[in-house]
Length: 192
Image 1 (cartoon, rainbow, N blue to C red):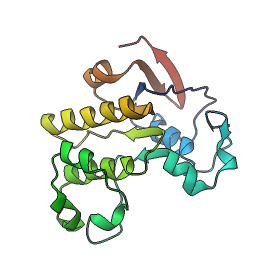
Image 2 (cartoon, rainbow, N blue to C red; image 1 turned 180 degrees about the vertical axis):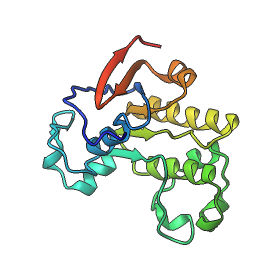
Image 3 (spheres, rainbow, N blue to C red; image 1 turned 90 degrees about the vertical axis):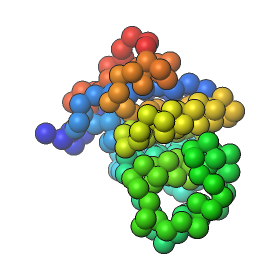
C-alpha cells in the first residue's frame, strides 16, 4: 500500500550535514522529497534559512533545493545540453572524461545516468540536496565515488543533505542524523 499523504512533520536540515532517511517502500519518503522541492501540491511551510519557498519562483527554488530522483529524466539526445555548467571535477570523480558530454543518452546504463544526474544537479550549485536512493543502481566502487563527491560538495559549500537509502551501512557511514519514515510520519533514530 502506498502512502498518499505525509505528516504532520517538523524537519530541519542543517548546513554541512547529511541527514539519512530510511523506511519501507510506500512510507512517503519520495513524497516528502517532492514536497520539499515543490514538485507536488502541498501546504507545507518550507524555508531555506529565512526565505519562504513561496517567495521565490519555482525554477529558482528548485535550483537552490535540488532533487535527485531515484530515476533521472533526460530530454535531449546527448548528455551535454542537459546542463549549462557541468562541474568538471565532479564528472572526473564520478569516472567520466570530458567526452561524456557528447555521449548519447540512449546508450547510458542506469548507473551512468544516475551518476551523471548527480553531476548535473551539482552544476546548479544547490544549497540543499534531496537525494532519493542515489546509489541504488551502482556497484561498490561507484557507490564510494558518489559518496565522496557528495561529502566533498557539502564540505565545500555547507549544503544540507537529506539522503534516502535502504542501506543501513550507508546511514552509519554518512549520516550525522538518522530518521525513519513509516506511514507518512518521521521518527528520529539514534545517531549512527
